[in-house]
Image (cartoon, rainbow, N blue to C red; front, side):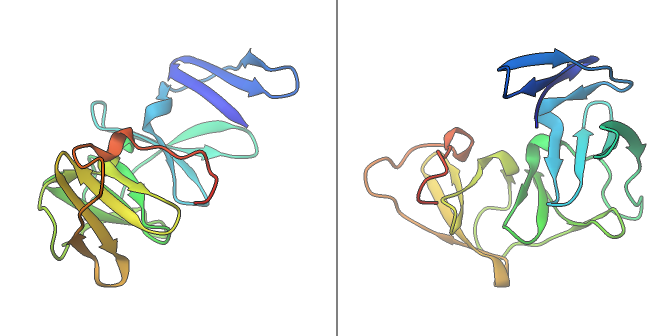
Length: 169
């Protein structure tokens, strides 16, 4: 299913009728803040510091709290995945998520920049890249290393503007 959420306004997209149906919500959820760990769906808003988990059977959101021994001010727009792990990258704050404990712990990257945002990480379906202006990196996930990479053609862009059609990736 596809959804539109903007605060207390929410719709579910019906592909058969190609229409959006109004749905009731109890919590203010914004689509830009929704992310998944591959199993569960979460909504994390750094401005309100409120976090929710979606009950996939009832399609209702419940408030959750991150393990406060780790980092707790998460924003869904900065969450990204290398295909195995889930990270929060918000400038100098770099964390890795443990879904079994709901804990965000500090991660230290080898190489690459110390400051970057998760929305500038992108994938071609095989590799994960970080693009910030004229600085570009490729991730070696096993060693948590960002190696510098040079592109041919376009070389000044941000990862947040890269998207895929799902073909050949």
